[in-house]
Image 1 (cartoon, rainbow, N blue to C red):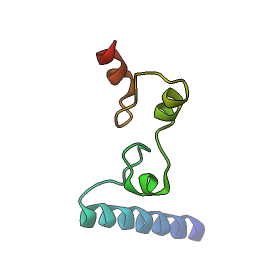
Image 2 (cartoon, helix red, strand yellow):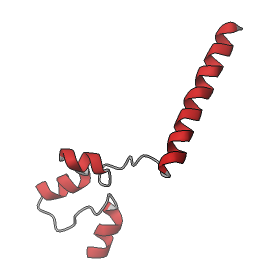
Image 3 (cartoon, rainbow, N blue to C red):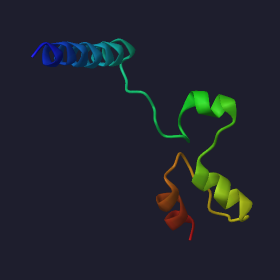
Image 4 (spheres, rainbow, N blue to C red):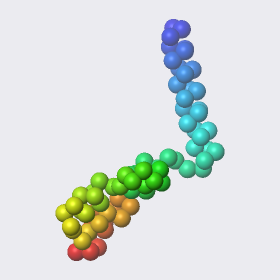
Length: 74
């Protein structure tokens, strides 16, 4: 029973910590590779965009909206 209580308290603290961080920042962490500022600084791009560049296609990924960008250009 003690293990359950300790685990429950730890889980509540973790969820509360994440909630407070989101509340203070006012937004969720950006997980899309094409739109994440830190990944852009490191030179990491959207995989779909890199693949299109390697294949010299005219259809490029725009913020990881690959399929909508391609359907508009064709």
